[in-house]
Image (tube, rainbow, N blue to C red; front, side):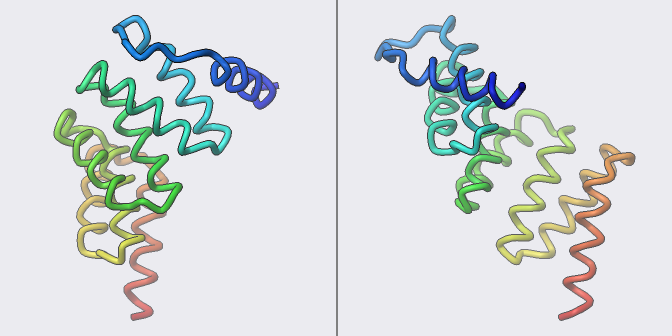
Length: 145
């Protein structure tokens, strides 16, 4: 049911004409559409809408984070790093941003940086099992080198 809703939401909102002059009231609309597209795997569309949200609110942490995830899904790791760095700058306590940036470093084979970020994510959120799992996978890679 959720997938059906996301598909319908994406189809309806993508067919709407986009006004060139954006206002703050458009922020939620574009953010919702971006999230729906990202959930459907339409990352390029999602990125365009996250761009609009960030244009409207240059401190919209959730959009930077989600755009970073979309870039990661497209293997555009350097762009993802820029977004995760921005999230961390805006909120130094975001364990999700540290874990996600650690994942990008891992994919870029910058294992030292990945380890630092996984450790920071664990420090901020000790019960986050994903950060522990990612750190363990990193150690496995390092052991096999």
